[in-house]
Length: 299
Image 1 (cartoon, rainbow, N blue to C red):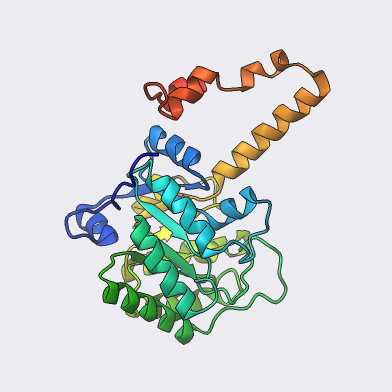
Image 2: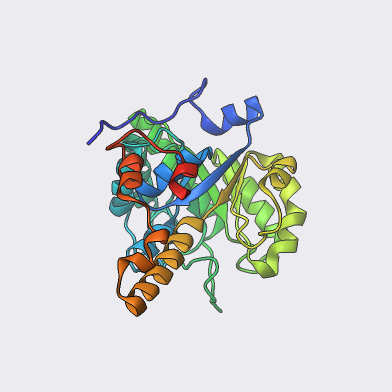
């Protein structure tokens, strides 16, 4: 097992501040394990999004606050052992309280994570795309206090972790004005970056409020429900990081399901061999042999 790599640090030690100063615009890819992180790095992307949906799905669980901070921490440690890319951890709503959020922040920081995102969904959260008639948000002032508590605990322990404050106001149907008010409050409470989540029904509202959100500070988005808009187009609007948040688990699951169906039908490896990495390619990916590029792996 390789030694853990130190968390990525730029000139000031502040990831989003340095990205803004240097005019950097990044694309992050959702991952749920170290293998996926290696593929993302080989493909040349700039950040890793340790996705709650992907980690939950990989464990056969719904994205409803069932994955614990300890389980997420284990994945952070595995990924940091193999990749120097920035790791942005999706920490749901902070696991239920100010204390659990602050404890998780310190653990993630010590393990080499770059940033931790928490959302203002009430506990227990439900994934943004789950249908829910009674989707409740945390009181905005209570959530802002959670951000302050996390920052205070990190500072007291001498740990550096960027905090991303995510609002689900558009998902809950509360509108742009409420979303922006929450973002401004969370930024004042100490959030290093802001995240606006939206669904298909709130996509137009999202596009309208995005410029105002970017004026408040660095913005992170996951445009799952606006698949036709490119990352450079979002970057041109001022977005710092565009996350393609759940492509890994959806791709791998669909590909593997199709392969298994054909294998079950035909009963021999020769009929699915073209869909599989060779053993040599797998060795190359895991560094048992000289590393391979994504082009070589997909050939």
